[in-house]
Image (cartoon, rainbow, N blue to C red; front, side):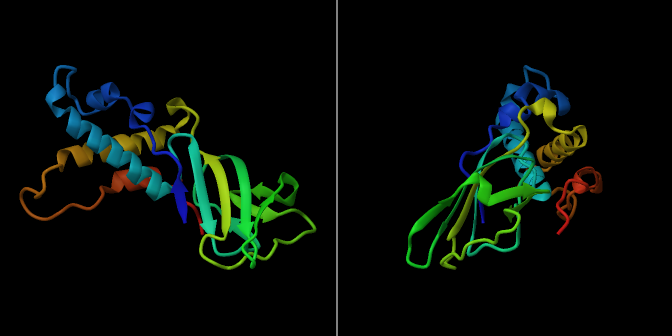
Amino acid sequence: MLTALAPFVGENILSLEDARAHLRLTSSDTHHDASVIASRDAAIAWVETYTGKSLQQRQFVWTARQFCRAMALPIGPITSIDAVEYYEADGTEVALVDGDWYLGDHQLLAAHGTSWPVSSGEAGSVRVTLTAGYAAADDIPADLMAALKLMMGHLFAMREGVAQGGGVEEVPFGITALAQSYRPIL
């Protein structure tokens, strides 16, 4: 299970001013700000969930029951592995040191010539603390930012509780097409 230790700050990813401009709202259209912010933040959450990419650098904790040969980490881009810890069968907490593991292509692996230790097997007995995400909004790839803005526009346009003129729309194809190449291959 992946848990963010801090939420994203939407304003640092896409400013309210830039969000308004994308939605063709003027700076005097402040009565829409709550809906713009809600749509922006929901779009950020969708892009992060759909792609497995954190749009803002922050710390996460990933947990598992036990170590496996290659542990695929479900978030990126990873900038550092901050801690790898586990609980032994007797409940003793053990922190591994940097030389005990290495990161390769978003997978955490035991150091060459070694194997992972045996954990207690309980839920959350293996814990990896890592830092992932783009360091600045300018580092976010243009197609991911475009997907975010299109999703924000879609959510802003469909913000009413009931869709007008028929059924509920799926995520428009253009948005998923822009974000598709960032999805992890399992």
